[in-house]
Length: 544
Ligand code: 1PR
Image (cartoon, rainbow, N blue to C red):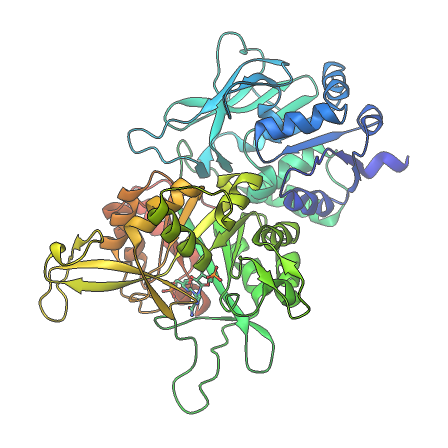
């Protein structure tokens, strides 16, 4: 039977589904794409990875005549796995963009998480799942962490009781998985939930057809259980990538953003190969991996094919979320061809990124927005967020500390410093920079964070030039300042040198994640030891 290792994928072109493709291929399955309603009718197994906005997805399904065949397929109780929006669309309606009708197979509404009482929205990260009754497909996730990224969710009710298989908690109980017969759908991303998630796909795909599938089954059965009942803090490994002087793409690491060795040659520091390191960090238990193409501001990334190749290869072995940044902006090449920032981002997504990160261009967008108070919809940030959803758009901030004697000296929001400045200054503001810290701009980190949230950022990657590579700890003054400015999640970055720095930043600030580079590259501290320390400090972490 030729369809024995074939799965039909309903990809309506709404966004970044490369990860699910990679995960399916890892299981030894071939993908048959849905081009017409007939492909749904003839499917043997159907995976529906919904991405993007609810209304846009329903529009596409209806305009291509796919909504009815999809409903029929599900009503006939044929093997189906919906993911994320692929779960939400089964419900009656969504409140995303007003009131939009869904497929109406499951009673209930899909509504937004409320960003009250410190709840950060989108809900991004590893949360625990609780099964209501045993299930072959999802047995392995019960009481474990899986990866979620969404702002809307369905809630369990009397009316949909017979569908709800599993729930999670984020400011209240929400639907994590539904099931009826052979029809399953999950709110989380199995393809980005490490071995636990891959094992769900393997089970859906008849146990898989590859040695990788066997390995997944083996590893999944070995997982010992740790308490998983809420959103875990994330530990992120970051790889700053650029070409060295010989033209090879290497992982480098700066000292306050200077990535060249001291001494005469001043070579670019080389800490390893990007794909190899990313694969290692995945195995070591990194909750996410971030690539920053740090010379992207001057070398156009679509001209930089090696970087895209790195991404393609890394995304075939890293089954936790991959974020990629650097060089996302409009660009005209030497032949006069114009590339929009959306095209650059789309190429990153196609190559395997789950989230993209914008640095310099977001600073210009924020400055303009604060000046005019008008959202033009034309900035890279707004356009990418509109098409891919704000949960896929990270803004990376590169601020530098500027001490002042009194807050009244500047119009930017200041903090009272934990440690006074060199001349006894008690306050500081954080000046945003562009082009890898080379140029300071007249905007503070607090103001920038608020502006980019308004323009559609779903998360903030908060670096600090003063702390970068120093190993003296995160700048908790800065992290708390920015955490207070926004309701989207904040990733603290720069300065990790000891496991205690991670507990410090989580205890003193509202950070949802902490990112480090140098200590992991130099193998001074393992990701596992960071997590063990955090568990001992009483925090819920995803352990592998
Ligand atoms: O402006 O959109 O092209 O994006 C450029 C991206 O590259 C930005 O995200 C910017 O932060 C990054 N970048 C540019 N230059 C550098 C540099 O180091 N010279 N790297 C750079 C940023 C900071 C972190 C680092 C942490 C943790 N590096 O990514 O990984 O500070 O380091 P540590 O744990 O060793 O202290 P655009």
